[in-house]
Image 1 (cartoon, rainbow, N blue to C red):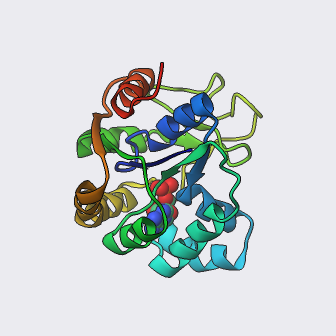
Image 2 (spheres, rainbow, N blue to C red):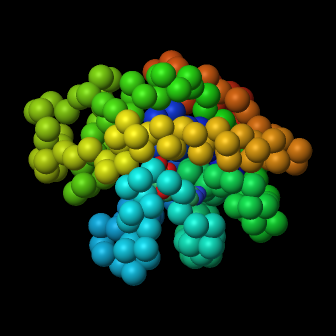
Length: 212
Ligand code: AMP
């Protein structure tokens, strides 16, 4: 069983790289951001608690995060392993995680802030089936419509320049110490997230020793 953490600022391609790895090796993709978005869209109690925080691009409280992550990992539907994305985001979350799980590797996707701004502000999402688009690199066939289900595409509430600046600031302040914590105990692989997704995927597989 393989257990990986994928880290990187928003727009670095964490979601895409997690999915490519999971498809290739039958692992489960655990996206903490997606779990929170599910709660918001389905108007759960937790969704109501976190909606404003998320829309402002701020981090949800550690207690809520820990309980969502713990609940998800306790479902044990990951026979071949998991790739967790968007967690841990600060030192406290990292400590909780390292106490409970042994990780095979941490994959850190590196990308300059300017490139993040360019990618994130052109991102569109299908609220119906979850498909991601990018108006620069991965346009839908029909403007504003999902290729898969035809639903109207939306911009994520937190993909605004203000919210993005808040996320970049948080990322650099809080997530960099997480990488330092991990580096004491786990293998941390730094990967250039600039090239096209397939190339980044191949680099990751080579670095963490997964067959092509
Ligand atoms: P993401 O899809 O990873 O960009 O996450 C979207 C939003 O969910 C973030 O901006 C936070 O508000 C919240 N979130 C996701 N993961 C975490 C985490 N590990 N800690 C705190 N907040 C989180």
